[in-house]
Image (cartoon, rainbow, N blue to C red; front, side, top):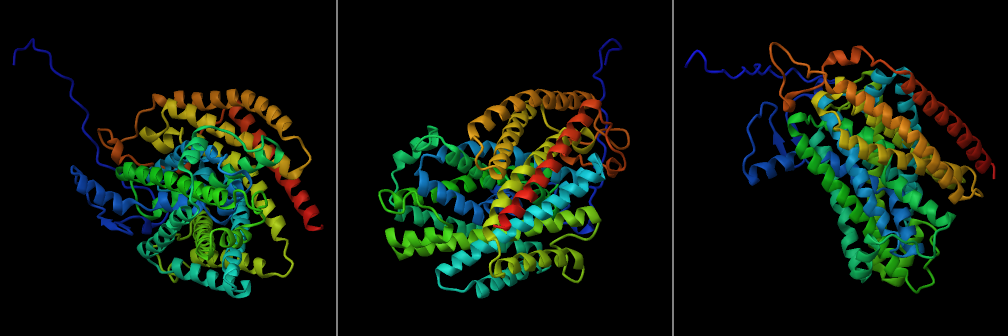
Length: 554
């Protein structure tokens, strides 16, 4: 080579991947999914369609389970109410929820695979002990009350078949504990997939309803509300959003990804799992709406929704016994998978915060507190449903309002964590995703404010609340966007943390354990925003407790 020939600058050597940080050593090892296994030492490239499909089959699970689990007893009831009272005119709401689900849960996918730490632990370490304990405390209360509604769904579903709730609820509780306490992640996931597959019983149910596909397609695309917008219809739309986008989903999928031992190398496969789950859950919701809409059109049942159990009985009268039976089975299935996923998300979060063993790979003997917490939640929730005269209606109302109150904090923390370069490094949010996510978070906050206000004060005008909330959202959104953009810019030039002489490849980059030893520096604006959020939550929860006590007292 001539002395004058320019030489290419040498590339820094690639550093070996550091060991992934986890709180439980059971989270390290082979991926043992319901439909396949991937060795921890596997570094082979998937070049053919068959190889990629086999890898996807091993990875698939957390995304589908969390999405189908969100079509729980409350979801079935809400969708049935939409169809029975408004026909197919509200189908467009479900279509709009697809990007919301995908954006939120995709961020969770990256957090779980890259950090090896559950959502509650990250909040605790990055935002302080108050928010860590608050996140677990509110998750426990919300999940517990929601689990109660799942057992209400069990009692309604089996009550349709003439089974007493005093027999149905205990059997369901025992079955859930037996499925979870096997000490095998693979066995648990296979059991969950039974519920996922049973969710498709809505397909023959739709066929029995003889739907008009043209009408369905039109109402998916063209927004509208049968009978016009009013406080009742707007609140139902908010309820559809609330039953589809819930705080527990963030905690469950992040921890379940960690428990399944999914690392950054497999993020794209888990993204596919999540995307498919988002589509499946929306199709399931749309199917229930269509069944109720076409089965009850031009009948005395149209516009008269009472509860999911009554809907099953009405379907048996309009479409025949088979249709009623199928709807009751769908309701039962939704209640069981919802209760199982919700309870597990709570147990995961407690294990995160208290540092105890929390893994489905462990036996009951090896993780006593993890399974004890799961069993205690199930038993207490089931017991409340069995109490004669228990205010089940008040509980259902409180669950919807509490979900609306807590959704803003969960969404804000999710977005801030995904812009934390110490946590996600090269996996942090790109600017375009922050724009989309910030808009989604803003809309969810606005909807949660409307839901909370109208739940606590039923006589309030929804349009007025929406206009005022929209103005506050526009003003606050500018400030929040500035905080997120500033955090992104500050982290943009931070080098990816490496070991040795080189940089760690993106697919091997994981959060270093040292990130849990220091908290990020908070600006004055960020402190003010978090103080505002804290004040909102405290006042809202106090008002909600007062209202619940008033309703409970008749």
